[in-house]
Image 1 (cartoon, rainbow, N blue to C red):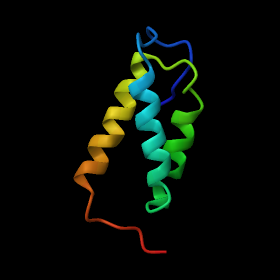
Image 2: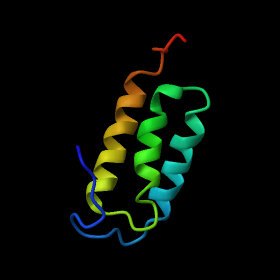
Image 3: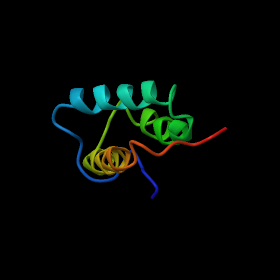
Image 4: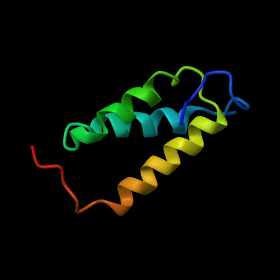
Length: 73
C-alpha cells in the first residue's frame, strides 16, 4: 500500500496517531522486523490522513495477533 500525504481527509486531532507511531517506533527496539513500518508512518506524522490512520490500525491489529512469534536473528 502506498501512503501519500494528499490522500483522503486530514485527521481532526492527530495526537493519538502521533502517540501510536511513537509506540510503534519504540517497539522496533524489541521487534526490528517492524522498523520499516515505523519509518513509513513517521514520514507522515506532521499531517496524518484518515488512510494513514487505517493503515496504522491494520499494523497494530497484526501485531496483536503475532505477539508470541519472534524473528530470530
